[in-house]
Every structure is written in C-alpha cells, then in structure tokens.
Length: 218
Image 1 (cartoon, rainbow, N blue to C red):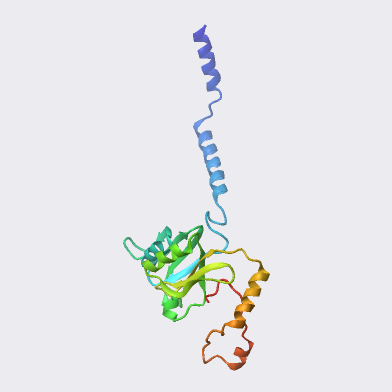
Image 2: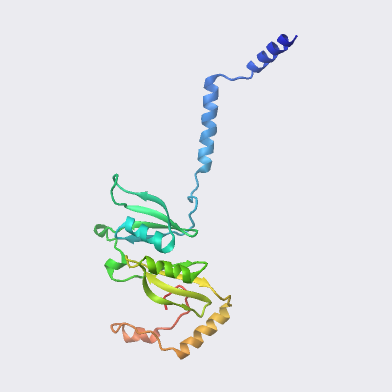
C-alpha cells in the first residue's frame, strides 16, 4: 500500500517537472527582468548634483582628502596596472565627489595652475573645530580663519594643494532670514568693505554691494 502511494506520488510529481529547455528559458527571462529592474538612471548613492574636482595627481589628492576630511574612496580608474589614476570617486559624509586628473591639452586645469579659484565646496560637520584641526594637521592651508558668522554658523575656509577652497561649518544658531539680513546690514555699517583689486573699473566698484551669502569666504 505504501509502495503504491509512493509510486503514485512519484508519477504525479514527475508530470509537473518541465523539460530542461523550458527551465533555462524561464530562468533567463526572470533574470533578465530582475537585472533590468535594478538599472536606475541615477546611480545608487548619488544625488542630483555631483562636484567634480580637477587635481594634479588623483592618488595624492585622494590620500589627502582621506586624511583631511575622512573621505572614503569608492572607485579608482587607471589605463594600466600600477599606473596613476585618471579618475576616482570618493564619499565625504553622505556626498559623492569625483576627481579628475588635470589635462592641459584639453584645457582642463586645477585652480592652482590657473592661479585662481572661482568656487568652493562647503562641508557641514558635527564638530567644526575637530574637523578643522584634522584638516590643518593633514596639510590644508588656512584661507579664512574659523569664526562665528552672522548667519548662525561657525565656519572657516581652507585651501588644498590643488587650489580648491573648502569651507567647513557647524550650525550654532537657528536664525530667521530676517535676523540674518539684520545682522548683515549691521555688520556692513561698522566694518570697512573688503579690499578690491585696483584694476577693477570705477563704475563697477560703484555698483558693488555686500550680499549675505553663507557659502562665500569672508
């Protein structure tokens, strides 16, 4: 009786086993569907805007950012084994930043090569004084000493060996926009305007106004 049931169950089970070709096709279709579902137009971990920095030496810059800002290297690309990196990505806090090697033949230069920097990266950290000390110890150069700013941040600005400016800040006061504007106007009344280049046209100087902007070095 038991043998009969086993045989009967075995036959019943056998009739539900598809042939090998059917299994392979089904698995392929399922995997293709899964893979296509995983492709996202925005790579995982990235935000809408990603800063890309041009540096002399990608590997040296990565080492500095790891020491100064606690960066985590995500990717590194070179054109041969043991060759210097051409490109890399790193993560500082929750933000991804790309590094590209200087390419003068393509008109791509570091700020240091150009002798000027037209932008900066702004980092918010939990303890600005500790982060500042770590960056300076790693070799960052002080551009604007750390101070308590009128917009409610404790902030300072550093420059790296490639000429990029980095402002580091922690929020120390929660202020309304009206209060920030009031403080900005009060400060402008008691402080002399910053020195400007002597070759700036006089008509342009006459139109210059102080603007409260927490991302611009004081």
